[in-house]
Length: 69
Image (cartoon, rainbow, N blue to C red; front, side, top):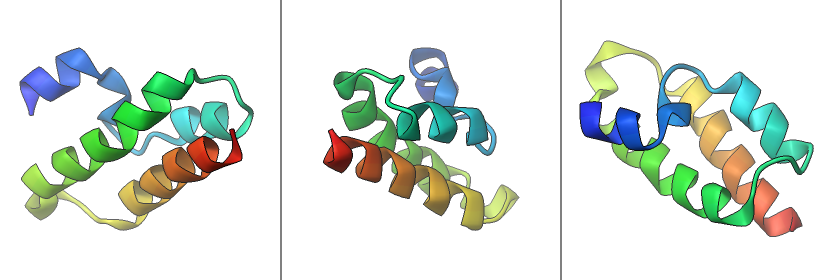
């Protein structure tokens, strides 16, 4: 998880600021493509330490932002 966090620090935490940026079309397409699967991987690795509601919103925002583009 540490390597994933260094490569894509947007996957840490709830990611509300990243979701807002995705929905306001302020993120490049390659980042939208990477962040969805990265958040899925990060959530899968750390599932016991928190909830799944905010990560599901994050993943949906990345996919929705990509679909909107």
